[in-house]
Image (cartoon, rainbow, N blue to C red; front, top):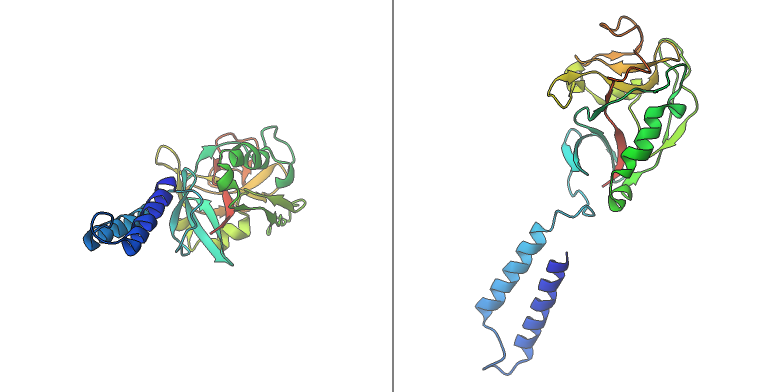
Length: 235
């Protein structure tokens, strides 16, 4: 940005001098003026690396860069985009101490809105929109979802995982080893010490046989659960 401003100032001074000069020694040729204008145009076009720059054009389904991660756009409304990491970025328990828990009091929520949120720069944090999160009961088992929360970073719910992805294949996420990995949802499973998940093949498990993971999700203390953060981003 400093370089761009310096070019703008230089160009303005040079063009002003050319217009007001007496010819002869002080002015520059039209060709030189055109060259400076081209330099300014190129600098402006290339000044897209700043984390403050808005995303000019984005559509649902696009993969965008925000911070050090790639994110998939799930929804766009009123200049904001709901995004989720393209991959599983970490493996953590839903709640490290185990036992009955809801999203509100989970250790994973504390991590996402603490250490993970603080990994973004201050300008990036300024683009993350604090959001009221609806924590509904498990739709098939009726397990209590707990109080609604206000979060900067969150996990998708069962309903969101079903609604924002078109099929199982679109929900598949890879881990750091390039392998398909199951990942946590914030919704409760078939009891309060289980949380709903998306299995490695893309199925949303809210109840019923879990393909090796207990009925209705994964035990909240499983430390190999995949993490796919989601957030609302100011575009």
